[in-house]
Length: 222
Ligand code: AMP
Image 1 (tube, rainbow, N blue to C red):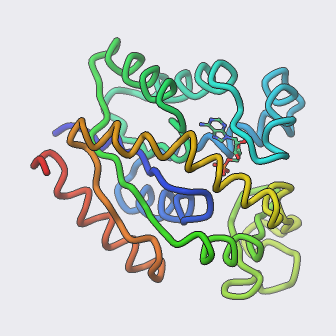
Image 2 (cartoon, rainbow, N blue to C red):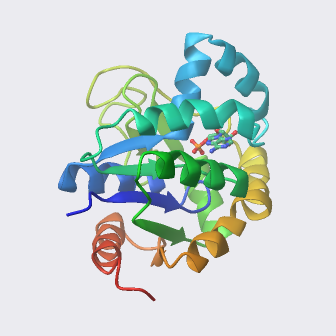
Image 3 (cartoon, helix red, strand yellow):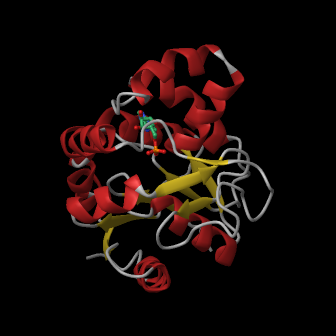
């Protein structure tokens, strides 16, 4: 059986990271997340991190030539039988074409694209309350799912912080960036027959069930 090679596509804050975690644990998939990769490069002070930081803090996309190489390397080093979920990459048509090309050269291709949708106002409201562990990246929401001790991660005890780009102004810029540069990927993948729509505006367990149903329909055409 072909291993699942799935992209989670959708605006920032729609729940891609949370769902990628849940689905990967259930099906033994590896999550390859571009936001996490970039934040790690920034923390490490690498050349890529230094170049990326100036874009991330303002909610702009890091240029394709900075991100594509590092993401493709991470994806292509996985063994052929290892399924994966891409969270946040590709985010532009040129990135998607590079991904297609890179996978194609080793005889692989994506098997599904899950398009998660939600209302902008709900996204902004949810994201300003989002906090993340500075160590293990577990995500919290100060209103709906806070850590047991304020500011301390339940899992590893490190500080729970607000991302620099989770302020209201930057969130609005990120949504605009999504609409302009990433939303065209919906058509790109629809034309390839890979797109599956999932309403992200539901409780996480329901979104998870909908994603599982959508993934099981893949390969059947639209
Ligand atoms: P995320 O955690 O996925 O919301 O990503 C945080 C930030 O990292 C984005 O706002 C962008 O600045 C940058 N970023 C993440 N993935 C990409 C990508 N595929 N292409 C360009 N920039 C990206």
